[in-house]
Every structure is written in C-alpha cells, then in structure tokens.
Image 1 (cartoon, rainbow, N blue to C red):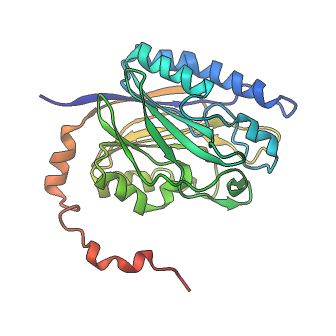
Image 2: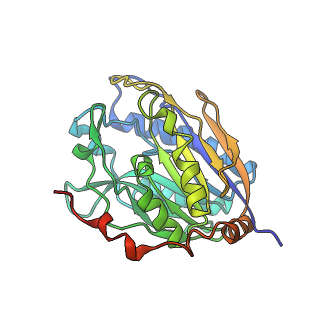
Length: 292
C-alpha cells in the first residue's frame, strides 16, 4: 500500500508594509493573516505543512536595529508556538513553524523552526546553521549559528528535516539530513529577485536528486518597507526524489501550495541511484580541514 502524504507550503506577504508600524503590530498581523491560510491548508487535506522563514515578521535583516529582537520568542512555550500547537492538534496536521527564537540565555537568539506533530506535541527544533552577512542580509547581527546539528523529526506521517534559507547553498547539511533518515526536507526562505534567483530552482531539486528525498521550498512574496531590498518572488514548490516539480506557487500571491507525495518512491529511486551505498566518507577528510 502506497505511503501517500499531502504536503503544504504557505507563502505570504507582510500585511503591514509601513515603516512606522511597531514590532508587535506586525507580528500580530502576520500571525492573524496566516491562520486562515492554515485553515485553507487543512481543507485541502494537508498533513505536513511548512511556513516561511520567520513567518510572523518581516525579513528585518536589511537593518541592524535591535528593536527586532522583540519579535523573538522561546520555543516551545512562547505564545506563537502555543497557537501553532493548538492548530496542529485541531487539524491533525504536522506544522513546521519558523520563528525568531529567544534562547534561555539573555541576548542569545537563533533563526529557528519548531516542529509540532499532528497531535500538537512538540518534536524539536532546527536552528539555522549557515548565517550570511552581506549587504541587505546582515544576519550575523541577529542570529547565532545553530548548535543542534541536522536533526530529523519522526512525525505521524513522515520523517522530516528542515534547512533554512541560506543553508540551501551548502550540500553537506542536505546530505546529512538524508543520512539521518529524512523523507521530506523543508527549506523555509526569504529571498529576493537578483543575485541568487537563478539558483532557486537548481540547488534544491539537485539536493532532492542527490539524496533521494522529497523537498519543499518556501519563499515569501511582496516587498517590505522601509528597506525595499527587492521583491520576494514566491514560487514556492515541491519536488520529488527525481527532481520533478510536483507543484509550484505564483510569484506574487499569498498562497497555499500542496502536493501529494508517494514516499515509497524514495526506495524505488535509491535502488536505482545507489548514492548512499557508493559514498566514500573515508576520502572526504579534507572537507573538514580548516583553510589556511
């Protein structure tokens, strides 16, 4: 019997594109905007859902303004996680919730994703490992690099992994998620038109093929004041282990993207392409050597 799972992705624009809005106003508006989209996903039969990077805020990293630290919450007992836990339980839906995480140590923050199972229980956290720091993306100001490795989460429907935005440029973590048993990997992102847009539909299908798993990539839409660093171009999508696109979102609309995934395809593909069998980790030592 086929193991079919319906996956969902939500891409969404900031409803308060006003530089004078307060941090709580934006956070509350983004959460309120997502709830009916989550309800829509439930009506479409979604069993495993992922939201976009820091879903309940703007992408504030073009700034270096500490006020945005106010949007950070603890995981899993912060108010946003509590709402998401309740929604997961209500709809028997696994929900991946990317938020700005406030650690137990004051002043320490991570770019994270909390994972809730279909009964509302908290399964764990992924913390973004690769942190960029360049014009318009001053992330090292806000985020400490992740320290939880590359965990996978055994949910009621599938074993899933999470990679966040800039992580997608690094194949090492994508491979580790597969080695750890991920059947579906999600990459919630906030990326704008320009430098890396042409990679959006290259890198992640390549990860899916190289590792023999399904992959869901999420990107927000619209522009965000006051930074206006460019257009978040949406085009969220699912691909299968052969790199075939199963579903794709629009460039500029709030949207729920869904796809049905037959998880039995993973073994079928891996029996053909024996990348895990033929790996040579004994020859890869140089990869972890420090460059001079």
